[in-house]
Length: 98
Image (tube, rainbow, N blue to C red; front, side, top):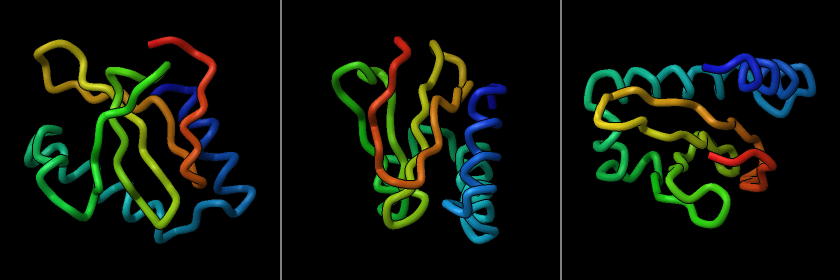
């Protein structure tokens, strides 16, 4: 997880946009990816995983709550998942290019 994503997550926790249950779900997501690989996310309904378009084309989104999302990208042929953003409000707006 990048420093920017860590800072964003810390801010959302501080503002109470996320809580302890959300952190448990984030850890479950990481464990799922480590055990089954990122390609398995799309086949498991719980994560509602799907590709994104526009500026985030090449990235994917997984559901972590009713409105919270993990935005991530799988790099090259390696199983390296780069978290791009964790958002509590289904917000896909992002200023950086990927």
